[in-house]
Length: 212
Image (cartoon, rainbow, N blue to C red; front, side):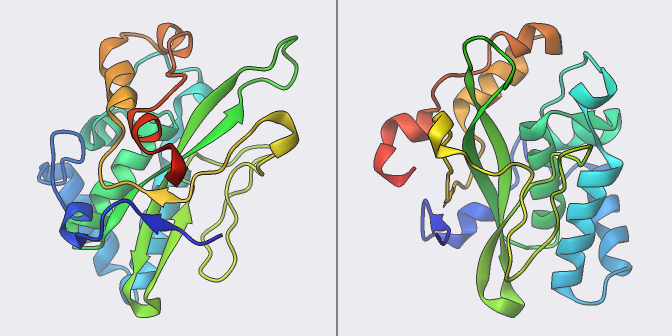
């Protein structure tokens, strides 16, 4: 299934905000550095994606309890959960005028749990001008059993969707992070607390269920 834009106003996928703060000096400098090392725009997208995937840790993988949210916070701390890492990737790309947004999947949190709990997982939708195509990229961070890769014709995300377990894929590319995601990231002071308060429903999905 191909991605669908939440809005056809491409400018919405280029905006700077308090969360996607690519006006931050460190974020802008990183974007400039990666761009200067790239062989064209698509190569820059790949480099930016691989930087966030590999150089910015997933908070849970390293046992970090600090909660990051804005792009600059994630870059400074060097870690974030999936949603936060998607904010940084979007900021890096938007800094160089590449449209980028946010996609959400619903996944089982723990397969070994007696009663499986479904939670949201965040990734990015990115526009490749050279291919006139939107692709999804998952910068969650690879580990044993997780092998997400940059792909143009073939998508390789972090987690395969298992409909038999109630998991759902999300192909809509939203221009801003979901408000419920921002709420939990900014209102919890520790990841341990955050883990118990992950949203069971997103505002985008609640208002536009037919697009998910």
